[in-house]
Image (cartoon, rainbow, N blue to C red; front, side):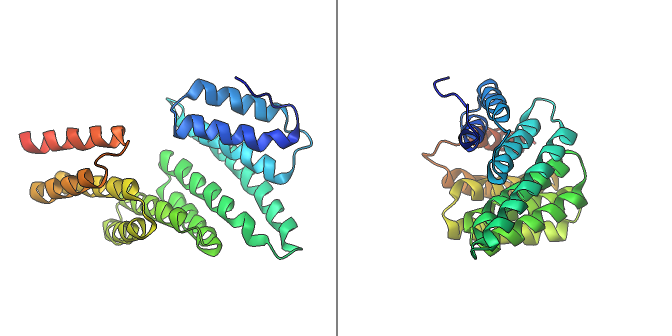
Length: 236
């Protein structure tokens, strides 16, 4: 690893690198190294920096082969506390909303942790809180992303009516925000629901739409899942 984390000002960089290694590169071991480096320099770090590294710590706990939900929630609650303090410090200069985008992301991750832990009502509440901050900050891509998560949480809670409504809203938001990959994932989830209900034609149509949205794009995992479901439908 080229960089070293030796000062509090490096903590945000380490947190960012940890998330990139996890989410975009799939390199868990390297992400762990960045997280360890960031945490080693946390003494004297600002609330903003602490929020960043604790959010990365919670995110990583959920990305483990066996997700550590309790550890994730502890880290994410710490991140939330420090980000709220950062927001309060900005309020004095009329810039509180500058901290809301990241607060929205933290609450989205809290919702994800509850969802992984099977606490779907808590997940719905956290996602709604995430939307409140993201809307207030004008984070339209973030709103689209969390709306899709909210639809998923309603579905897992067996609230199918709400799930359908939120999925339709999520698709519209993804389209408006220019997020074809996320819209394709929503369509895939809709196809899964349709296939389980025996509506094979609808599922096949939704999978074709999803496939068209990500054509020529790097979405290998989603493409593989689409192909698997298409195969299951054709052989059912």
